[in-house]
Amino acid sequence: MRGYARKALTASAVIAALTLTSCTSSKPSTSASSRGTSSGAGQVAGTKGTGTMADCGINPNTCNSGKTKPGGTVQYAIPENVTGWNVNAANSANVDFEQVLAGVLPAAYNIGPDLKPFLETDVLSSATMASTNPQTIVYQIKSNATWNDGTPIDANDFVYAWKANSLTYCPKCGSAFTAGYNLIKSVSGSDNGKTVTVIFGSPFAEWQSLFSPLYPAHLAAQHGGMADAAGLARSYMWFDTTVPSYSGGPYDIQSVVKDTAITEVPNPKWYGAVKPTLSKLIFRVITEQGQQVLALQNNELQAIYFSPTADIVQAVNRIGGLDTFLGPGASWEHLDFNEKNPLLADRQLRSAIFTAIDRQAIIDRTIGEFVPDAKALNNHMYALSQSGYQDNVSPTGQGAGDVAKAKSILTAAGYTGVGTALKNKAGNAVHIRCSYQAGSTIHQQTCEIVQSELAALGISVAPTAVADPGGALASGDFDLFDFVWIFAPFPVSNAQAIFDRSGGVDFGGNDDPAMESLLKQASTATDPDAVRRLVNQADVDLTNDAYELPLYQKPFLIAARANIANIRGNSTLGPTYNDQAWGIRSN
Image (tube, rainbow, N blue to C red):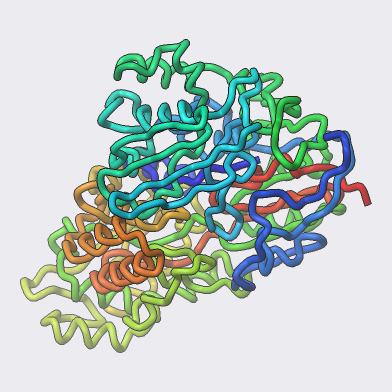
């Protein structure tokens, strides 16, 4: 049914994410639902689809649409067992867990495959900004929206989400998503709780990221309470450790077999416009991509979704009866400097290195093997398909592989041995490590290419496999690191979590107060055009710092049996954002 309108991850969750992503009615329903039926922004480079997914690069929100008939089971793979059921909690803020609960938990907003937020009109009839001073958002909950025990979804659920995710009211809850909630002054209900008024103490540009998902406040009251911080923390933990018997979505959880499968069945109390036609939706826990492909081949799975390798793409292409799509995902590769290293504190050296690195050569020898037209990413804060995306990297010459320009930068900065054995003005030789997660072939290839390219400047590069990339980054034990960030649909919060020294992860120690000030201004702007302008100004500043070089968006692959309608890739949330529309084709 729904994914969740997430912001950036907390620092601990970011470390976990980069570690994980471095590996790698009874009547037939139509695909049209109240969630995301707009067409995409246009064909994106690096996309390829077959069958009913052929146009997913052009129409990401509507491709593979079709009518469905009652009955049938779809088995879909996730790579790890669910270990927590409160996906707001930092320890359970995992996209795979969120995929499982997408059909169970209601939300104010969802995110489409085009990375744009849209109102969950099964739950809400409207969400409007009634005032900008103070910023006031009014949510109108549908009169028939209820939990599966008959309790109305109402303002109490919004109040619980606010207080449980706010450091002010529940500092020990451990929420992964406190931004925005901490700025709320009050949440109140009227019209029997179906109208919710949220007043902010300070403006919050990305207010659409809040209240997604919602947990049942009436159960929170029974399992800890909402009156104080201790009660909120107890209920928050209860939601994390208890398999949901509750549902405010199109599916109920029928059974959980640890490390094996989670089975969901249609919720008979589902109030939404599109009713599930599947008899069962089963999430199979299969940790290895190769095993997922084998299960798909044997029809033990009907759909898979992940970031592939060339071998995996070839294996999937050999299986008949599938519709597939390969396209740029929300994860993106980049190279980061550690400016705490005295050698690398010099921006001129960093700029020369980035100028000498040829990103297209890296792409051609890595993902270019199975995505022939993949292009470099030229923005740190917006994905290729997002409306705010603009090229802020190419004008600087970074990533162009321009060795002559790089040499001139070094010579002008007083370096000697340019092209042979580079030394800085203090006479120190320039030797750096290019670190990557052990076992990642693509990252190893990238560092080896960097090693070859920087030799032309007289720089010695040692490709260095790291068993614990999160630990190495957090401790600053690196010089240049190839790893992954994840784009969020709300770029300001995402950028602040990564690049703001006061609240971000700050692995490399880049200090740019002007850039951080622009992001802070963007976070309180209520005009979307102003937000985009400020974020891109911040991105220009960050690019000029020569701190982080974007490489490319990692491709994702979705493959599904051709008789399954309305399943499509969603690189932020996974395909289950609309799982109530999945079904067996009726024609």
